[in-house]
Image (cartoon, rainbow over all chains, first blue to last red; front, top):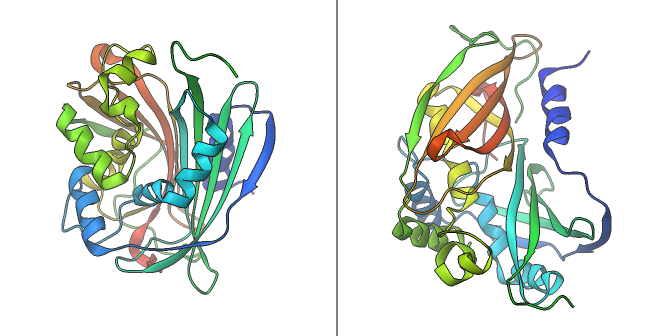
Length: 149
Length: 149
């Protein structure tokens, strides 16, 4: 029987852009922590309501800015381009705890036509239990005046 | 973790077709974009540097898509506090510029009571002139038995 969740997954797939995936880059596992001060600041700036005693849904997105991940993205991106956020998905098996330690698995794919980067992140506990999966689609925009390489 | 089958249906569980009352977020001033960049790590110059935005063909600084997407969590919590957002998928369709706000809308596409209470929601964010900025879908569960890891 098709569940509502199945339908959501199917619809999520429909929302995702069609891509011609070309290359994949897998980064080494990265350890992260939901540091309470960082969670509170994020909660405050994203319109959080209530006591803020939970990790906001979109908080893991910030881990894409970690130097090792950002560096890999910039390497794939190349000079004279900016990433434009085109699509985003989150799928949670369980919520994240404040002051919890997690392990990230990251995969980066690029596509030629259209030019995009697709980043897949899996957030797991130390014991290997998957908490969340994120998928980020970035369209690559060449800045005006930049020659195509 | 995902609730087990057989969970009792909570009272007033929404029905297919139910609407979630619209809610406004923003306007997002440039200072808010700077603060979001700080807490999220997303310091893409597109959102912070008018020249970069101009080079990308934009009339102003575009609000971070993730800042707007983050608003869906407090939007849904303002509707019902007993929900766990298991999945959220979104496409960013049109930029919203600094100084502008968004209005969020939601509707229950499908309501399921068994094997577990679950809702599929259509979520949208509209900017000035009612332009569709974000098209999203969410699968939400009843939070009663949900636990963080």
